[in-house]
Amino acid sequence: MSSRQAPESIGRTLTPRRNKLAVAALTAALLAAPGIAQAAPQDVPAPQQRAAAATITWSLQRASNPTQDQLTAYDLITKAMNAAVTRYNNVSDLGKSITVRYDPGVPTADGSSSGTIRFGNRNYMNERTALHEIAHTIGVGTSSRWSSLTTGGTWQGAQATALVRQFDGSSAKLSAGGGHFWPYGLNYDNEFSNTAADRHVRIVEAMVRDGL
Image (tube, rainbow, N blue to C red):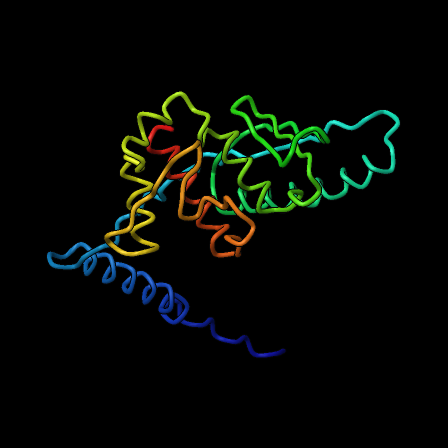
């Protein structure tokens, strides 16, 4: 008959549990004691929504059965307008819907506040001209407020004036006449560069903020 093994001590079985309870009690007491800072739950700020920027869009009116002359003009105009509109949308938050036409009777190109641009002469179917004419559709030289904002041949708005001084120094000014402005008005092809084109767009945007 095999000998019976003595039961293990109950005290040994409960020791680990008692130790855990003791540690838990001590931890709770320490956290509750004065001078022990407990981290409060932090509110997560709600994400802020940013207003959608306006954009400039454009469309080209085409003849239903275009001639070779018209097709060539359409290609040049498309390249010019795509470059100009891309620059405006990259550099500014201005918005406008523009309709473009090829009109051989136009000596150069023109733009109106109604949102229409006409290209005539091939020599003007380039980005510089497109940027310049887009400015006319936005209000440069065409807005009802243009005259009051260009008193004495100088732009009177604070925003665009501050910007041209940032570009050219504290004594710089924006001159205006004949529905155009300078510097950075891109009135002639020899004024064009990537820097001048970007500054042109930024000045037009600042003019709008000035109330154009």
